[in-house]
Length: 326
Image 1: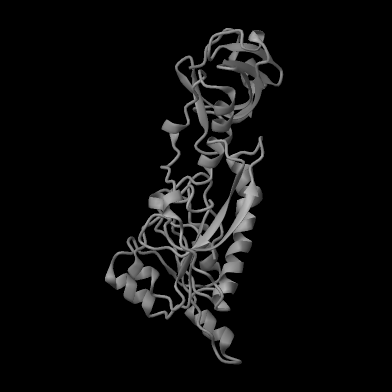
Image 2: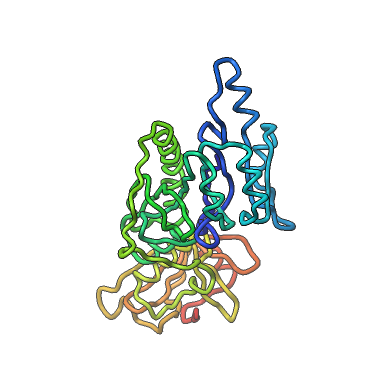
């Protein structure tokens, strides 16, 4: 199964589509002694989203082809002929880890044991396509993942299991995902498959009254307002690192900020400047005035350059105190 979720984007319309596979690695039914392995290989299939022109090859597709497994890439899962093709495989269980196309219940209900899906939040909180970004941006101290039974709604299906993890004060989207939600998701999905196989997988109704849905976290959401308190700015930078990347402008050109350190004011001198004004430039970065303190910027990227240390950028750009970021 494909066990990765693109950081900052768990899918258009609440799902991202990469693989549909059955319970005995990939849509496999139990075979008899001796012929089991061969039977399983015959029944294995990998479904992946079609590549867009010029896009990188899907790693799941590449792995499947290397393993000599048939790959299916329908442009839509709403078509009866696609359902019939899948039905002919007689799958036991469909495992959805990364889904970019809407998949209707007509397709979801084909496997004899149903379909299960990964979502990187503690449902019903943070439904939607950017479920890792928003808890960090909103200052949450805890998040997690859900394995659930998808339906025609947007992350609304019954929950099978959940795992929790803390969000530290310096965690970013990248650290929460790569260090925890990714490896935890792999283990959780394997645990869920075992529960389904054993006939012990629960279906826990979501409390829809407690649900939240947030849209995609994109460039429009990621602009830094230096007039906000340091905590909001710092959370925005963390929640947008690495994608979509919090940003501001310097001399009418975008400048992305990927790492920063908050410097809360203890007295009026801790602000001492106009909002967005560069207060100090040093070898390891530069500080910017905000509503209740300053933000020390540590890593940046120009619109056409690589990520660099903020001190290096400041030296190259000849950044001076009193320069305004807006």
